[in-house]
Image 1 (tube, rainbow, N blue to C red):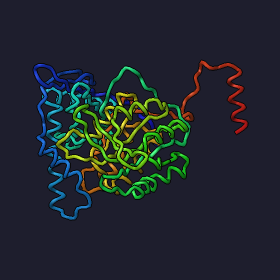
Image 2 (cartoon, one colour):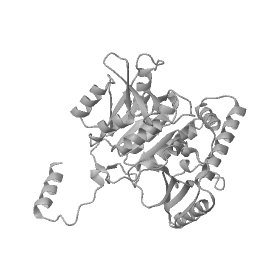
Image 3 (cartoon, rainbow, N blue to C red):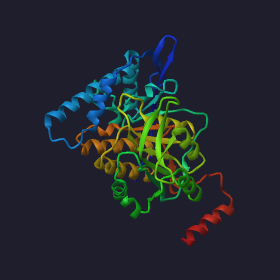
Length: 394
């Protein structure tokens, strides 16, 4: 079982805009706070080049692979310099040193609440040129997109198995999707969790909005895995996921609409949007936009896969990510482990495609009742007798 986080420090960074332009501010860190000017790091054509580099899998051309690695590092360096300029970067270095001396992790929490247009950039690829590493691949510096809303969401006390609902929509009029192949890729990657009694997987065979409402009404689900097409609505600035209607035709559902449905299902802790884009990387990313809408509507955490996974990446991601979640690992560490597995098994930078958006401060989705220590204030003879009888019966 993955041990829970023992100690962690926070490096909270926000990008905001006023009449003078864009600024990046350290809201809180072990080394203090500061503010600097923010400069746009990438042009649209460079975003498209990054998308192509991350989508190149199983390539046998060694020269092309090396070129892609260099491209991702260079664009990642520019993303890093935009987010950590001058005194912000110095404060990050000082915070790293303080976290190391305290034998603690330094969690990088990025906030784009007031600049949703910048939230569409692939910040998971930031590359630290001094440390020669991608922070998103380091267990010492897990990277998340954090939204601090009014309502605190505590870890959900749950008894295994966790229950996950998988939705794969293949509406008429869209390019064909191998629905059964995707389902079996997911199923095969987590079958060991079902055998161990840690995760129960179900598929929404009829991916309509009414059937989703009915399934959520009739049962309790903790996780949702969504695979379908997506697009961006320029009028609402929201991501749109495509379900099906009763006749199998497309039924677009906005992130706000889906979020309103999921927020009333209290056990739901995490949604994964592994959508297939309909547009290039130069447009606002529909998965990220929909994920942000789910978050603001009350879903505690969302993983948005920013571009299409192939079968290999799907299997590796699901196997490692959901294994960690079923072990009650903190969400950010679970995703970091999954990224590291993708890096180790893939020829591309597909490891940077999953983005974590969360409202949970410490990343702890669930509480394992078996690990909750007894409350010393509850010392009545009735409770002691009750627990004693419970042990005797077992």
